[in-house]
Image (cartoon, rainbow, N blue to C red; front, side):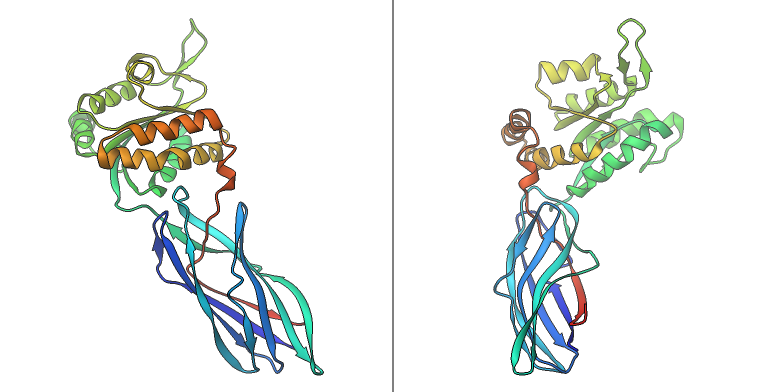
Length: 306
C-alpha cells in the first residue's frame, strides 16, 4: 500500500494585496511503492490555482523537493484566506503505473493578506450592545484592509467628561474617518430610523480638518443633518448595507478600499470615486470572479487505500 505526505511552505507569513507569493512543495513517500504526483491545485470557493509545474515521481522512503512556483495575489482581496489542496496520485505496482485518482485535503489552510502600510482610522459608531453587534464585525472588515481602528469608548477608554476633547484629538490624529450609521430611534413623522447626533458631530470634525471620509449606512437609516448634506453636495461616499447580510458589505468594501487607501496616501479622491462608480454601475457581479491564494505552512497525507 502506498502512503505519502505532501508539504508546502510560503515564503512569508503575511503578504500584501497585489504581491507575488513564492510557495515550495515537497512529497515524502512513506510507503514501499513508487509514487507520482500531478495535477496539483489549490482550491477556493471563488476559484483555484492550477500548479501544473509541481509534479514528479518519488521512490519509497524518500522525501523529494517538487519545486516552487510564484503566485500573483489580487489587489482587492484581504484577510485570512482559506484553501484546500487537490491532486492526482499514481502508484507503481507490478511494473505498471496505477491511477489512484483525485485526492483532496480534509483540512483547510490559510495565508494572511494585509495591505501595508497600516493607517489609523477613526471609526464613528455606537457603543450599545445593539450597535456593536453590527459595528464589531464591520470594524474587523476595516482592519483587514490594513487599518488600526480607533473608537473612543472601545479602543480608547476615558471618563465621560473627557470624551469630547479626546474625540477631537483622536480624529485629528487619524488618517481618515469611517462612520457606521446604525438605527437608534424612529422619526414618528417619517417612520424612518435615524442615527444618533454623535455621528453627525464626529463626521463634522473630520470634514472640518479635511480628513478622507467614508460613510457606511444601515439601509434602514435616514442620515439627515451634515452626513446627508456631505453625501449629496460634497460627494462624500456613502455605502448602504444590509445588517442581516454583512457578507455583501464585505464584498463592497473589497471594491472601494484600495481607492480609499490611495485617497489617504495621496489625498486625491479620483481613484476612490472611480471605484465607487464601478460599484454603483456594476454592482457585485464582478467581485465573485476574484481569485486568491491562501496558506502559510501546511501538509496533507494520503494512502492508496481510499
